[in-house]
Length: 258
Image (cartoon, rainbow, N blue to C red; front, side, top):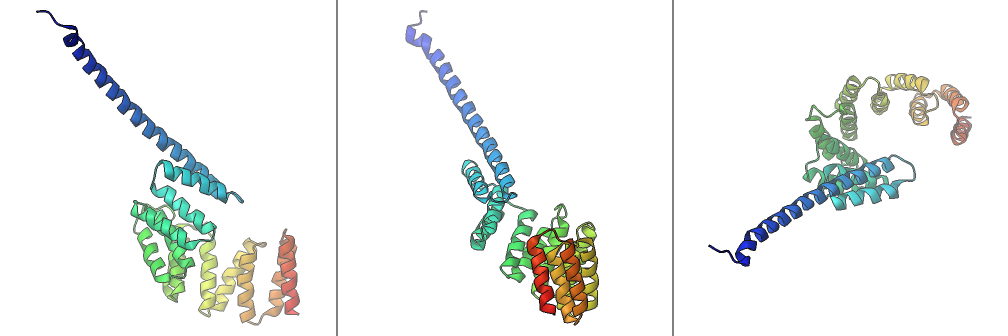
């Protein structure tokens, strides 16, 4: 039986078509993989830029490119939310935190969003979001979550619960002194001035050039009418500080005590 040329080439053409389609599918998969890898690189560059002074526009550029290449990745949306917060646009920041959560973001984003809600003085919502982040026992930054929860409770004047939350943060990370600073401030609001001053004195001794901590101690000392002690700690700060502006600030504060 003789085969004509058309009959001979039909199987070959079919085979060639299958190979072509297979190659196209393989190329498409490779293209998608390459896009995701490139998106990851842009994300890492954006994250790096976020931590550097004066690099916020670069961070936005890299993170937006990452989102365009591989849209709606929770970690990218979270980073963009933080970038908008650094830029001072809290409404835009909130939009991206909500979007990240809709696309599967977990405890870290819940905690970051709770921090934003505290800044917006929406303390009840912040408390709810902070508690959600603490529902995941695998979240590594438990101390930060308890600090943010404490801030939310303090904003609602739930003083005892706030105190407990700050102490819980200390338990999770004894090397983090921020809970002590927060607790000292909380005590000052509650009129527990001696306890507040004791905490602040310990922190000032450990961080003699930290202006923020010193300001907290000064506020307590002024409530206690201890002007001479306030003058002394200001003088010590002035002697220890390497900042010309901080030295000038301390001198002005001393002048106001005269």
